[in-house]
Amino acid sequence: MKYKLLLLLTSAALGLFSSAALITWMQSPGDASFMKIFVYTMGSTAFFYLFFMIDAFNKLTEFLKKPLYLSASFFFSLLFLISLMGEPDHILTRPWYLAVPIFLSVFAVLFVFSATLIYSVIHYKKEVLPLNSPKLKIFLYAVPCCLVWLVYWASFFPGNMSPDSFNHWNQITSQEFSNWHPVVYTWLMIALHSIWASPAVMGLFQILLLASIIGYGVHTLGKAGIKRWILWTLVGLYALAPMNGIFPVTLWKDVIYNAALLLFTIIMANIVLSRGTWITKYSHMLLLFVTALAIALFRNNGFPIVLIMLVLLLIAYRPYFRQLLGAGAAVIGVYIIITVPLFQALDVKSANATESLSMPIQQIARTISEDGNLSAEQSEYLSSILPLELWEENYDPYITDDIKFHEEYNSDIILNDFSGFLKTWASVVLNNPIIALEAYAKQTSLAWQINEPEDGYTSEYSIGITDNEEGLEPAPLLTGMNERLTEWLDYSRGEFIEIFWRPAAFTLLILLFSFSSSAHNGWKAWLVAMPVLLNTGTILAGLPAQDFRYLFGNALVLFFIITFSFVHFSGKKDPV
Image 1: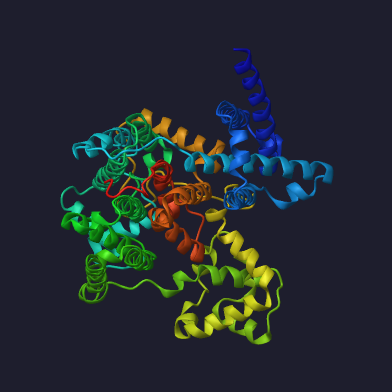
Image 2: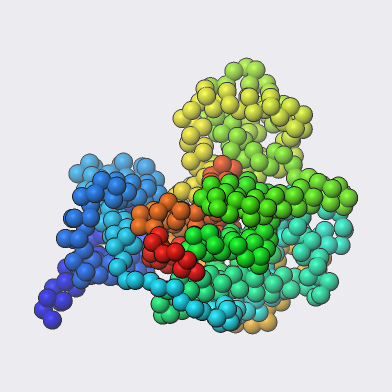
């Protein structure tokens, strides 16, 4: 008893010290709320208590003698350190005798944290055996999510609709289709609208779809041998996570796209667990086809992800080359049929090509606003697109809207000579590499920074219905719950934005657990996380704004990846 009490007191002291150092690294301690300090301290205390209880110190000492694990622990610690850091002035203005100990303390804590997680996965000794699990359990696992999210549905009836939502909704009546936002989501709206002429039908569909996919994912983990109490804990986490409650009742194509990313992740897990034999069933190939096609059609960055995944599958599972090639050809063929002859037949207007130029626009705008090095020729060309003073006046480091939607912004100059614009942008970047890098870092902040910049923002979710000509207004069926859930959502982003609403944390943990899984299962374990990692890569290449919805899939996939990483399957023939 005395020993456990001593461990608890030591853990509490280390927890308080660690949370204080971490919060000081992220922000001024005076700006942190009592609740944040309390949660961080309790979390750190629990971590250190478990650390000591399993004698992790001695185990890690041996574990880290291997260069790969030492390097990985150092690498992930450094990534977390950079991602959590507050504004540079917040750290650099402190005296060195305070700044250095804070840096070393935070790095030490993150190193122990990273090394412990990696060790826990790699040295998980519990034999996980495949189980026969009836498919009925898919629906049982989906029920809690449906029940919780239906409360959101009733509370925010008939659904949350932003201007992007009405870009789709207005096309239902106008029948003038545009692929600025993927038109396939509009067509889905039209189909469901024919059943019930209310936005609420989309919310119901999205709830059932996402809950079913989560049920399938938990069922997959159950068949791989994960214990029942862990599976139901996973279901609870999925059901109660705030982003999972509000997103299915919001009319965004991102909900279905990210649900498809989660389903693709689960499919990859089944393929990897079965060492490829999962592919041999016709029903499985049909599921792979539909999922890949959904990813390709429901977000404009989805098609490259599908192509890369098909190539990776062909490389990893050459014995099933014929089946995979057939599925890939079918996806590409149907995608081309929909986006070329069908789009032409329905007179679907193409998305403006300049929509993909968020990063070049931001780097040019920052160069102008920072009085960077521009030649007379470059200045004249950029002025023809938008007067230089307006580039500077409307530059926001985290969003391009004020520039690309400015009334004087002449995108035709770019469209008429696209290569000329790219050459000008490349030369501006080469002449101003530091400014260009700063612009890139700020514009992609959502994807790599856990700690929200002081001059930045995060668009977490949308509540209510934007002003519209359709006469649609919020009409909550559960008024009291509407207020409580709104308060809960506001609280989650006010107090714990870096935990719930900054997807960089999810990305880093996905990388860490995927590495750990590959260390004991082989490189193919990485295939499970590749769909969401490739999506993150496309976002890093052209993030237009700091909207959580672009990386909602990272939050969905994280719980699955963490649990999957503890499954040892490399030596088993056909576990699923």
